[in-house]
Image 1 (tube, helix red, strand yellow):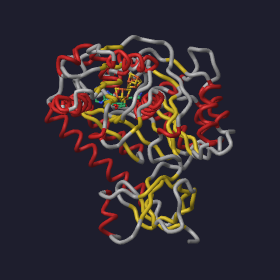
Image 2 (tube, rainbow, N blue to C red; image 1 turned 135 degrees about the vertical axis):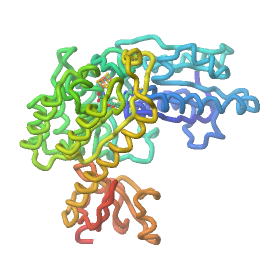
Image 3 (tube, protein in one colour; image 1 turned 90 degrees about the vertical axis):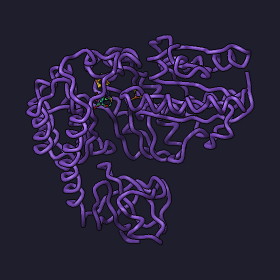
Image 4 (tube, rainbow, N blue to C red; image 1 turned 45 degrees about the horizontal axis):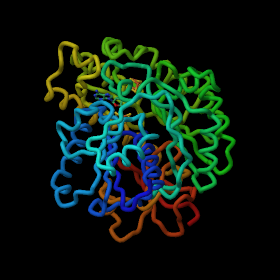
Length: 452
Ligand code: SAH
Ligand code: SF4
Ligand code: F3S
């Protein structure tokens, strides 16, 4: 069926959800809805949800909860819970949000239209959380792109088979499955034609891309993407340390478009905790991988994910993580307090850590890292970096606006994934320009275009 009206989409969660929300937008467009950024105008509201931590899940419930009142004065408004919380909760979602119309699981995108039709014809509380080995594929609809048209995500695989004991992903996203290389290449070629210069390939463990399907390997896929005209930069996330191959290390070194940056989540520096997390590597193995990377790609920027306060984590275990940060000196980290997820095995582990203690460990860790992040950034002062211009500078960050109140600024990223701000004169979005770095802040750099 074709409808009229506006669609508002609110996205919580990881990059994969950002990508999925664009797919949801293009489905809604094909059903006649127009995408809007004004929630008040909406005739259909979709919340694309994340259940990785308790806080993300609560955000989804509180966002959708607001519509109880709004629906009283706007009864035709359709509300949709999509994504990971939807998959996890199924019809239980209605217990907390009685006015919700559609629960759309992570593998139900191809049937989204049918669910809307059902609601439009009077059906209440439609749930679709059926599993599917298929990956919903549709060619990118550039009219649904958000502001940043020059750097795009491309999901290359879905699900996860690793079953880390703290993690909900295998339960809410299903088993690991990879897209066909031809379809990925076609999508990226289309993006390149639309002016996209950078792609970030997404999967929970990109190193095992194609293995189950007996397709080309991830490294072979990178080599193919490296040949696509118009694409200047290739990034990817996430790499699992247990599967990071030397071939991939060489690919980062040798393929000119693959960026000199790797996100390699370690989660903990303690072997005891890594084992309980079921990560499949030891601290020593992780360190070996890092040494290989630093040896083959000397200037590589490294980032990681850390969980503090995993059940039974002692001060000693926590110190192992602190020492790992000191040894490696990451460019940046994402650190989280362990959050109990009832569907993941660790929820039943003994010796759960007190919330206050988790917060304290998290703050201690973040403080330590800030020192290294700033140190790494300061090293770049005086250097000239190639920057892909992504858009106008957003306020808030690092006092830039305060320092240069009356100056129009733009922002982009270096190959090493550093955020760089610079004056916007003679610069357009999507340009790749050289910036001489003059100042370094905890989360970004400041400089001027060279030759301008
Ligand atoms: N597939 C990726 C990460 C997916 S989730 C990987 O294996 O690295 C992103 C990050 O969220 C994880 O790396 C982990 O640090 C964090 N995370 C996952 N589950 C969590 C939980 N229950 N509590 C706190 N952090 C969690
Ligand atoms: Fe979760 Fe582990 Fe899979 Fe990453 S590898 S998505 S942390 S189960
Ligand atoms: Fe992503 Fe959150 Fe789902 S991290 S895969 S949206 S649980």
